Amino acid sequence: MESDKKPLSTTAARDRILTCTSVALLLAFLYYADNHFSEYNLRILNNIAIFIVLAVSYNLINGVTGQFSLEPNAFMAVGAYTSAILTLSPEEKLRSFIIEPIVWPLSEISLSFPVSLLAAGLVTAFVALLMAIPVFRVRGDYLAIVTLGFGEVIQVVANNLVPLTNGPLGIKGLQPYTNLWWSWGFCVFSVFCIVRLVNSSYGRSMKAVREDEAAAEAMGINAFRIKTLAFTFSAFFEGVAGGMLAHLITTISPSLFTFLLTFNLLIIIVIGGLGSTTGSILAAAIITWSGEWLRVVEEPLNIFGFSYEGIPGMRMVIFSMLLILAMLFAPKGIMGRSEFRWKGLFDRVAAVCRSRRAG
Image (cartoon, rainbow, N blue to C red):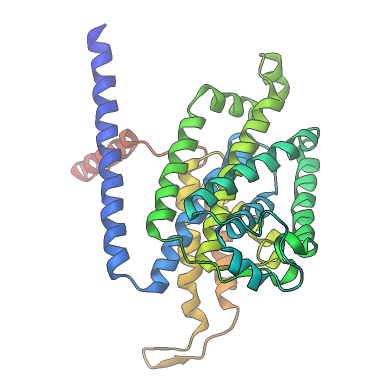
């Protein structure tokens, strides 16, 4: 009995040590990047962290729970506006809201950045909870249509509720509070929380609902409660990510939170593998970085004496072709529904070593 338990505990201890070492290496890299990278590269790293948060939280409802939802742009908008309004000082609000003054008591409230992010997450989660009551009365394509409509409603409200959102003018002059430590710190925290949730009994219930909702309910699982939990939990992190994005670009408007934002996130979780947190992380990092790197094809180049003038829009053409190839050769995504495991990595390395020796 003791010999059976010992390898498990040793493996778990090894995995914890390797995970902690990986986090320490990430911190060392962030420290180096913060002191040596250009502003442009720092902006890319911050974007990668924010999109990882969005991808893993969106994957929780779409991939793990299996509910085809199209709401991230709405939840990001709620979080961004909440955080932006709360961090502005009364004087800044007076200067920004030139069409109509902002409503009281928001005109007098000014909070710190961390508190505003927490408020953004909680407000977004509350909106998601209210939304879940009517939304999860439908399934499948109907659910997608309802959540898509909610995103459009939020955009219309942001355009017309001038005393709260400043209408189409948006909110400008935000302080650039989002830096590598905030974005990547919250990124690690969100991944940790979502992985723990997915590996808990609630996560197993979410997967059961994804596979067969009727069978899950027959086994005693309250499908409505589980879907609402996933929806609300996902919304909290999307709201905080919206707040960090607002204080990264320092200006927000209703036109920023269109369906295109949701569509990009949908591409990320499908390319990564629906249901795989690891896949969402990898796809978010690769797609966000490659989207910026491909800008080089739109600029004039001189390669081996051949002059290339650059074609506007070519970046998206190449990006689309790469997406098509990815879906052809990996139809289930980069990771499918698998997750990264240290044991799997060691087994893969050992297999490669054995094959080279045999060759």
